[in-house]
Length: 138
Image (cartoon, rainbow, N blue to C red; front, side, top):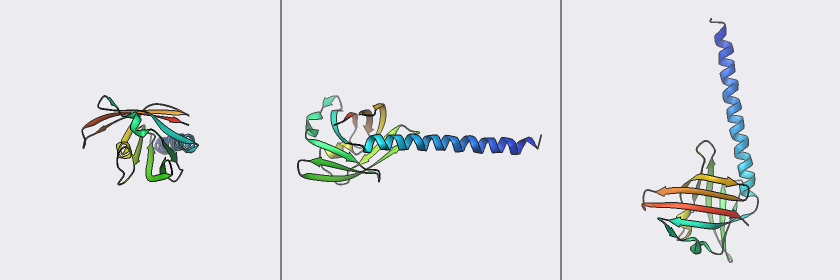
């Protein structure tokens, strides 16, 4: 039986390495879809109130260095974004931003996604809000 342990150990290392490799490839594919083009808020509900109109005119450009730029007319605001494949979340942060951008400062659970749209939900425990976000690629 002891001769079996090295084989089992090697199999476990190989399995875990493959899993991490697959997650990394999925992460790269998502990053490629997200960073290609401009996005806009096509829907935003906060505590059952539709506040989509407050994002009218905003476009978002995601970059591979995990920064995101919110563009509005000739103004721009810098933020950060990260994706967690295993948790199916995207976190956005626009430090010091006012409304409506500060409403995006959440960890969003992805509920549906395609190469040109994303739906996500979040619960803000500080402001006690329940949020539904929909983004579409322009």
